[in-house]
Image 1 (cartoon, one colour):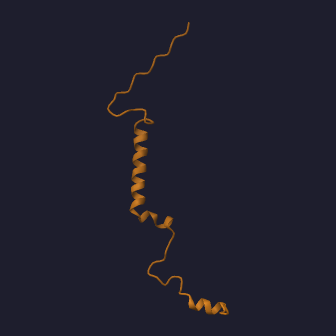
Image 2: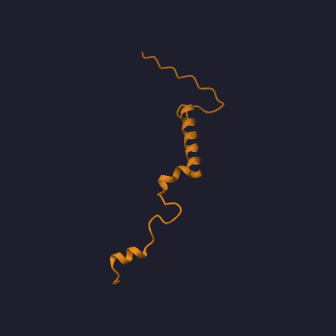
Image 3: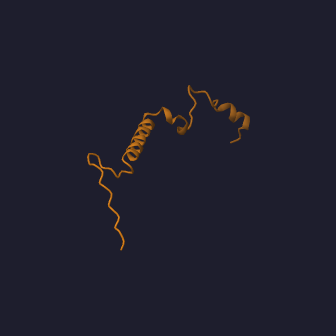
Length: 73
């Protein structure tokens, strides 16, 4: 506890003494395979949503004709 500030700084290793500096995950996420799998799944889901017209069209079934409006008296 009686060590001076200069002595404590000399004892600690330099901040960049390792092979690679540790960056936060959000800065190196684009190199992770799990990130790219999530991106592909998200883009696939967005494409299916847009192509099926808001999921209103069922695959393999023709679209139903619109209901005619009732004429008033």
